[in-house]
Image (cartoon, rainbow, N blue to C red; front, side, top):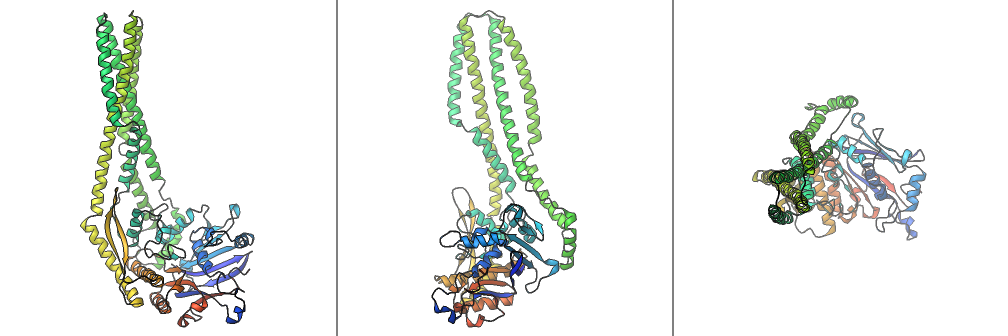
Length: 570
């Protein structure tokens, strides 16, 4: 997808309409030497970078970036007030052609800066109410990325919008330090077209089981074992004391039966509680998975699909099949996690019936003992023994549940390890190596054209205390200056778009840059030549006195701004 047009509409009237084309698209100041009689008249702060920010805003970026000073972090009150009071609307038009708007592939995004019922946040004329869902919808439309997918659309396209640090200063770590190493691993695997075995169902079930084990281990197993030993000693002493009394044999038999019933009731009750808890955790996990389903009104999209068939030959898979496949995968994960639910439900029913029977027997025996004359000492010992047996049942059941849950966690960890072993196998290493070889052919070609040096992306397997992961990084030579770093980034971006096209990986066909004036003019010219040759859009602002003469041509400049004619004209 290319950018065709950016419209700025204020108070219902068109303020600016900027047309873009293939190759280099420059936003420059037109401050003339005659205007520099006063030092305050410069080409800065006229809105050049804001053009890029407005495009980024249409892809879901926060509006604060547009009316906040990048150095102080303080809001620019006059800009914010203008955007709101003038009801400024930003319209971005994309299509599959760089130099003209293709009606059949036109994609229109509109956003304003108001809130509530006055907020405009539309894609092809349809309002998207929630801010979070806006970039998700664009990602689903343009890249086929489902909502809440990892990596997200904004992560995947992070290298497209190099407007602020860290994206300006880092070739690969363009999202900064906030994503974890495994999040970067997932991102680069997607970007480089590498598919690993799906371990999501195992991870989700393992998380459920670990949460269950954590609740069980509120009291550590070691402590429970010591409690059990002490409890058994107390029971033995109490029974010895009771045996020394002169008791009717029939009464003692009933007392023993009563103690056993208390113990059994406690065991069943604790198992029932644990089973209910486990069922609840499994259903919660299933609900979270079910929420990831993609429900699409296929009737409404039929016309769009027919148009796509007219533009793209031999579409093998229908949109409905893609949705069905996604939902099938979700159902499979849900079934994988809930496979033990039927057995668990049956166990819960059986335990409830058994508990009811035990209660009936307990009540009948209690009533019978209540009609028996006993000594005070016997009653006291019997009461103590009853409590001790209840404790024994509770503690032994807790130990058993912890052991069973630990075994389950170990089993799932072994399953996950088997999947990881596949992910970190020699076969996977070769696959990654092969994909990076393809990428580096484009990357190194671009870097050699710019600097006469071959750059490339490589990787290594690393691990921390919890997991193994792949780390990707750029290798280059004598790349210490800030200008040369900017050249490395441009070489990678141009090379990556060519690689993604060849590998049929979804990619935007444009790049937004700021701070490219740090590069030498020769490299800027080379970027322009390569972008034109490869049919890639490059957009960046630049001061007129930093613009190489070879690039200072009307065909390259899409917008001129000055202190007398700023972007918003106020």
